[in-house]
Image (cartoon, rainbow, N blue to C red; front, top):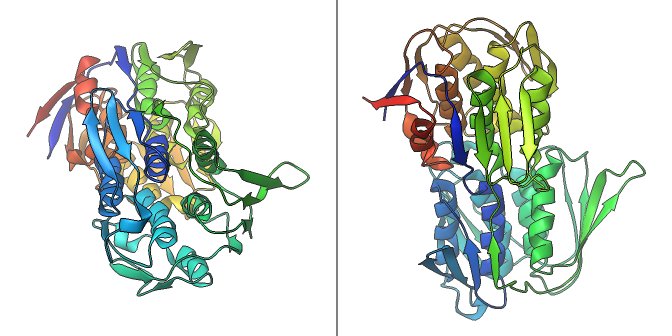
Length: 424
């Protein structure tokens, strides 16, 4: 799907969609619990549907209800022989379900599409291999054989926090206590915090080991059972809310409701980052309001919030001075090479940008508009859409359907705020 967007300042109020990061974890925990769980979920997405499909393949019951979903747990005694888990394009689904499936059953097959077969999983599979699980390949499609055994695990903390999340959920299922030690400093720590919060809601005993500075260096997971809380709600998604908060900083005031400032989601840092650019951001109960200010450049360590790079690059293009985003090497392994894709996006719209191996350097330049590729990346498409509101002429986005990966109602909400989008 290609769309044409006409320059219009965005203003008004939208509700944040349910957090994709929280939903993945809570749905998996619910499928591992002792009783059914009702999960209040105000929206779904292609990635969440991928996780639900994998849970169904393992035997979980999933029923649509008015508030969201009712999850009936997997019966470990009746898991199909060699179930096929199709992760589609969801890296979270693949990296979470690999160890979980290995803890539940002796054999399972995995497949995926898009860029997912090229995304790294080798170090996760190698560690699983040291604990009883053989893999037919280090890339999709693959088959695993053998069950995980409890014991001492080691993973790097600087490759993917998703490896750590998958193992933490799986280790609680094993017949014995386990330890997971990080062999390098943990990056994207907030995503592991989301996991720990989800496990705590299901009464899993997971202890964090920290160094003298308070940085996580490992985890101890005691043999325990997932206990359903009965009913729970998925919080609003700070990652996706960031796009419309940025729109408020670039145009007229925009309010996003349904956001919890106490959430463990790392992308709530968008409030601090927008303020750093000079935007006005008012945090209220269950609502965040962003309004324009005099925007100026800043230097940003993008490692803790990698999903924010595309929209922050747009803000940087509309700010006076030169903004440097650094520590971004891992962004080259996302749904797209997000450093290269963000640079291409800015250039396509008439901006000025320099791409280095782990940096993006954006010089504030008026954006003229033009035609931009979505790179099959939902966050690039949404960033281009917000940038279009500040361009001097129309913007065409190729592959705009990528928003379905995390935010299917994005263009509907965009229109609610006064944006004009035409499907070509």
